[in-house]
Amino acid sequence: MGLRKILTVKEPALHKVCKPVTSFDPKLHKLLDDMAQTLIDANGVGLAAPQVGILRRVVLVDVGGEDGAEILELVNPELVETDGEQEGPEGCLSVPGKYGLVKRPWYAKVRAQDRNGEWFEAEGEEIIARCFCHELDHLDGIVYTQVMERFLTKEELEED
Image 1 (cartoon, one colour):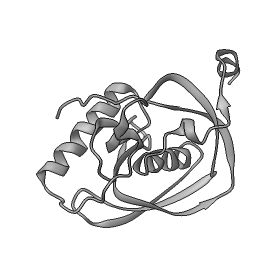
Image 2 (cartoon, rainbow, N blue to C red; image 1 turned 60 degrees about the horizontal axis):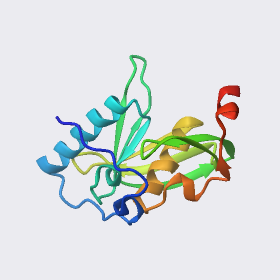
Image 3 (cartoon, one colour; image 1 turned 135 degrees about the horizontal axis):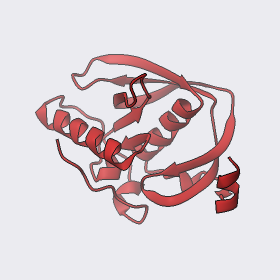
């Protein structure tokens, strides 16, 4: 496993639509392993392949198991169901040090493939739903700063 460089919002790769994964091979497995190490090292909640310069439909989400990090791998994910609404602060490893006010669904369900190509579904509420939506946006070249209402001030963040 190795750490990958996380691109910042100025990088063109973050604004491109990613291609589906078609080969479930050792190269994909290495990407997933490297992304997991990078996500943990950056203390993030989610990471999409374009954030490390790979234009493929691959996302990792830390769904927080009982013992800390529990990384969910989503290959070729698609949002299949949402419900409700939440509004709150959102950050991004590609927009370091800034947070915006973003509306997202309260609940989200995704359908994706695992590292071996098997299809499955995953669902979550609150931060997990927010993270699913945020990371899937990355796969379509959308950064949260494009969908936020406004940046939050330091004082507003300290109130939470």
